[in-house]
Structures are given as structure tokens and as C-alpha cells.
Image (cartoon, rainbow, N blue to C red):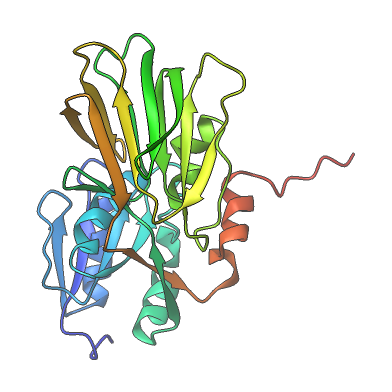
Length: 265
């Protein structure tokens, strides 16, 4: 099995239950595989199998995207929106990977200050306990001002994450766009924006001597002066999607958000 691949990476997260145990089970089935923790990622693999939750996948996606390495994930965490495969599906998943019965989806990513994000970049005032006043510029032209707890700049992949909780729309990952969503704005006429992927997004603080707090995928924190500019990342995250019906976007949407529940008596 997997003779056509030189090496396959198996990534586990020691902080997620059953992650390492499942990695060992998969390693027994793939002889040309290398196991390593999420804290010590390696780039010399044909593709990587990620074991954990969505947080594990997000960290892996940011690393492997820079090296054009495709990934697939087993969910041993909670929701597992991106980590689609289940532990009990090991044999089925490996069979499809071995026969190359899958597609690779290129997922848009964001970039700012030499850091990347697959889901979103969140901008807040440095004093997160109070509201911030910020201006939004698109292609260097001022669009509006916000008094809000912060702003979310999201990819379509991230539209089912923090963006959704803040009132943003759900967007199919096949749509090339970005979302800008205010967090708890103080004016009711402020609404989420959907803009083309190649737009230049600049956010400036209007608070005197106020720095901005930046979060990438909710995992990497940063502080910048009073302005941040966000672009489309040149690299895409490559997600392996198995050719089975439930792995299509709308079926995952129904399953994870429980939209398929019937309210008939």
C-alpha cells in the first residue's frame, strides 16, 4: 500500500485525546510513513495526515501551505468542521488515498505582517476590554468607520467559524472572496461586507497612541502600531477531499450545523 508515495507524514496532537493512538494505528498500515507532533512539523513528505481537531488542522495548514503539501485530517476533537474523517473510517480513508480517489481543494488564505491565516484575521484594540474605533480602507480608499469590539477579516473557509458567530454569511469555499465582519458594532447600519479576493484591506486605529491586537486563526497573536494591511496570500491551503458524497460542502454544512433535523411532528 502507498508504494507510489515516497513518504507520508502523520501529524498528531498530544493535547487531543486518542490522537497519538490513532497515529500509531495508521503508521502500522503505512510503512513509508513518518510520525511527528504538531509542534515539530516536517516538509519532506508527499502529503500529510493530520489527527486532532480543527485547531490542529489550522496550524498544520499554515505550515504545509507554504510548501504546497496537501493535507487530510481525522477528527478526534470536538466539532471537526475541517477535520472531516472519523477514526472509525481509517481503512476507507487509506484505501481512497492509496488509489488516489480524491480531489484537492485550493483554499484561499490571508496574509498580513508576514503571517498567514486559513480561517481569519481578527483585529481589536490593544485594550480588548473596551470598544475600539477603527477605519476601513479598501484599495487605499476610506470606506467607513467602526465603533465595535473588533473586526474579523475572513476567508470562505473561515465563514463557518468566528465569522458565523459574529453574524457573517456562510460562503462556499469555491467562491473567491473575503468577508469583513464587525464584532458587536455600536451602530445598526453597519453590516458585513463580501469583497473580491484581490482587494487590499487596510484597517487603521483612530484611538490616540492605540496599538492594534491581531489574532491569526485564533492561534497566533501579534501587536502592531495603529495600522494593518491584509492581502490574499500567494499560497493556497491544499485540502484533500475524498470522493464520497458526505465530504461535499453542503452535506458537511447540514451535518455539522444540524440543518438536516426535521421539525415535523
